Image (cartoon, rainbow, N blue to C red; front, side):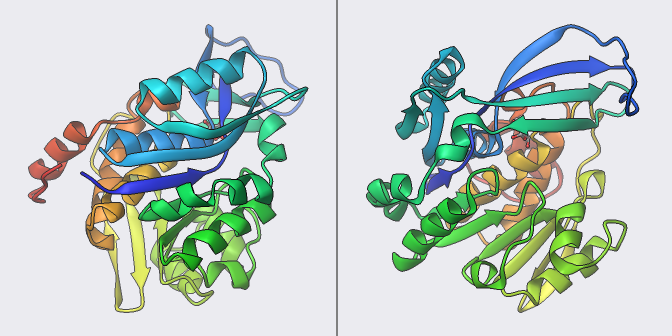
Length: 311
Ligand code: RIB
């Protein structure tokens, strides 16, 4: 897969404990061993796209601390261009505090944004050449909103495709959504955007979100797969059966894979099929970045489904 992707987004170190169940408010429970994993929605999506074979550049901010250094080294090992990652003096690298329910593989996450909050529109403008040189810009909502806007403006100005993952859940103005080629949201995120409910049919949520202005919308629905709505039609894409041990970064695996497939010239439908497989495989392994599948793993599962692929 030979396309290029630029990710403008967050970079975190995840601090993770697995527990027999999620604690109730005010409750203390004992968990398993404490682990750290590289994470952050932006970083996860960048590595997911790189593992699909795309050429990936990451634009973001880390702290001038040990976590920041270790995350920068991780990008280099993964073959992601890290030249547009800046260190912010006097600010900690972003951290995700994650509790994983080991029965269901579900999680709760609290993010301390740290240096991610200091990623400015000027940072992105200073590396505009990197943003413009990629076929696809992939952004999320874990860095300041005006920075996401600046990245989209630069990419659109150069005629590049824009994929927006509306995570974490937030309100996104129509002016931004109308600049987006593909909006990716889970059910809760889509419900917030559309005024619907997270329990609604994901296809209804996708069709409702399409009316807000993006050229296409995918609503991800975990083990149920995803629903794609575009101006020329809509469809449900199934997931593959897996034993989920940790859903952290499953959505990021989806987004990064979709961006990589779009960048290599595949259709939105093909990209979403690959994204569903990548997301399901990510849920079978612990941690964020360690769980992200490689292109070969996704191709094998797609071939099993009868979808022809050459990565
Ligand atoms: O989507 C999962 C990610 O959300 C974690 O890696 C955590 O850092 C938060 O950004």
